[in-house]
Length: 342
Image 1 (cartoon, helix red, strand yellow):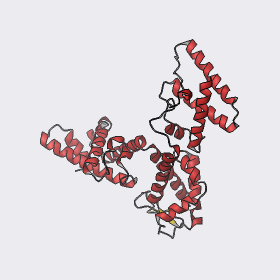
Image 2: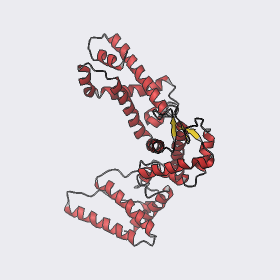
Image 3: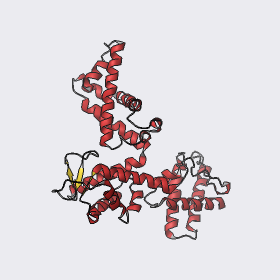
């Protein structure tokens, strides 16, 4: 049965409990098949289940039927929570299979964005950069219809269709001197990062790369970016900016009471003192400018009463000024010292 037929039956109210359970199981099976197909296309089928959420972290892989059933059940609930959106199409007798498939894709995207923020952002940048390369005739895709991490082969000549092996591709990328810095920029979706990635791809023929599998490129870049952040930041994810083992170096800023004119005036005075103290530091202009951007970012969180993010997330948010996370660590140390003296 199609998704349309299944949903019409489930919503008819004419099924026995036994028959309704059978149809629901068939619906879950179809959702699971669609999820598996889309996960393979996105090259996340073989990835750790935790990449789609901590609730799946106790599963080793998606080949476990129960793991996929858990994911399918959550997707089932996601789809039916949007019943009011596709009910009008059903009443008009229209097919909704395409709409259900779109909801399945939306569900996966939502899970990826929440659970694997780095992998998702990097994947979007890689896909956009490759598409731009194809549009500018720097790369030729086979098959040309759609980018697929399982089947698409990318070559630098329309007459070639044999890719180099992934080890040679990885060595070629690593040999490009700005690759190490680019890994940090790719964790945020922006045009500049994509432009630099296009430039990197265009240099691959200099290392005798004639072609490669799209999936090999995607997986390598995502894994490298994840590893870079995990290895370089070296920050306990449980440690946030306002917590420190050194009681003398804590950053303690309390949300101002916006309903009290005096409190708000005191808060504005404190902000001015902090910015003036940064300007008076015996540091380079670059360091002072970074510190100003950092504290202004913190001011925003404080003024809206939001929790100050952990350093790893803050580094990603400010990756446009922190090409290397260790610079953020040093700036936070300076800021803590400055705050202890105010």
